[in-house]
Image 1 (tube, rainbow, N blue to C red):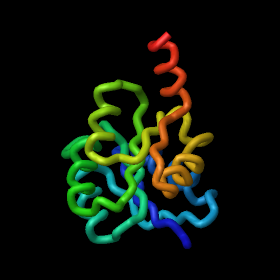
Image 2: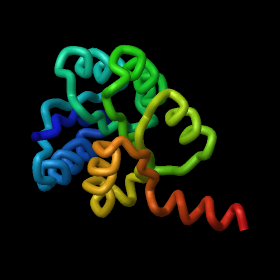
Image 3: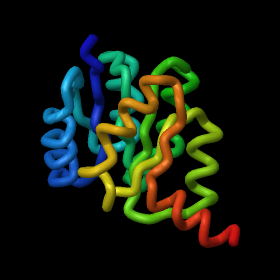
Image 4: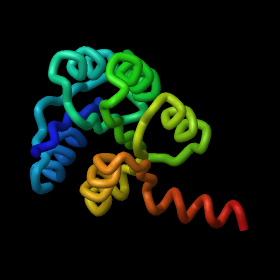
Length: 139
């Protein structure tokens, strides 16, 4: 079954790159794009994607708040958060609101397909570079 994806990022070039990455993943189709969290909430309700790829830092409504709203409306939807930077408090916050994954933008090309597969299997996906950072901190 083809997974429907909504891409959310305030930068058009990032959305374009994400679309190219997603379109190369078998059984996954981009059904829409949003430039801020408020539009993402609206489109997720209207289009009912299986997965939302959500940027954290956006105008109007950020990705953390948008994820909270989306998960309140449709708890079965999967959100994979993306960001340029790892901040534990933000990752913890978005996961507490129900996001199923977090991928650093530097790793999107190499990790997005794995992240989608992981969240589709009802598991949480964390970017490998985040896991390495956590390992260094705990040692």
